[in-house]
Image (cartoon, one colour):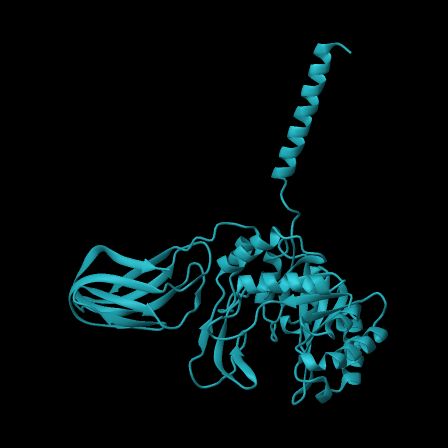
Length: 405
């Protein structure tokens, strides 16, 4: 081969290798499979809207269909089966088991679950599995293993069996035996550990995922929060919380929220990790229009699609007619996504006769400024407003309002 042709061949090989390496470097990670929990115990017309608007986001639905409690017994959730049949997506029937198995009629639960899933399939639903959500005490995992083993024997072979797993189980020698009874599992990384830690801590969640992946030999997904809750108190039995439904307990709950940016940062970190057996994410929960503690669907979409999550706040001053210098103050989320309420809002004004805060804020008055300080966190959906307080001042300083997220 002539020297010139050899040089051209070597150049072509070098360019091919360079382009291949560049393509490899620019290649995006495979799309993450996203599923959604439908956890409302009362179905409303809002479900139809939420399901229709989320079809392109979630491949599979996980529907709360039954709940067992030692005092309340067995309860089937009145799910809108025709609506789910029309939706047509694959789905799991989720059964929530509260309390210890020793207090529940395990045999009856298994029989009712099999009967219910067959009824759902007969109604035209594409049920592919049953998921058991049971917060078993770590010491009782062997009992849970036996329950799952018996349930697996009763289920049709065409159905998968899944479970929700708790991070507290990770150090237990009984966990591998429990996981062997299920076809897959869902690691729940959101919970009330303490009022200070809130519902979700990204570094802790990432550590749990890595530890769990070393234990399980089966496919698993991670359940992530897209909601907040009200903390009513913490006692020896754990946290008493209020989420999608009111507990009708006296007193004002402390609101615990999860900022969308927290979860978005966690997902970015997760995408850089090689996690064996991890198959995707399940979001808790399907947002309805009147579910004030759940993220809006627009926000959930923005997190999933890795869109910017920039917050934008506006303080609106509403003068009261025939009340010289009296203003009602409103904090408005002017951004594209839900966001936690700002930590502090300062209004520059002079000759103020009186002022007060409202809702989630307390007031610190000064000679030339009124400072509203957050005392109870909460999430405010995009486009929504909330009372901040009021003030009676002779003059508001133009451009003198400062919002600290």
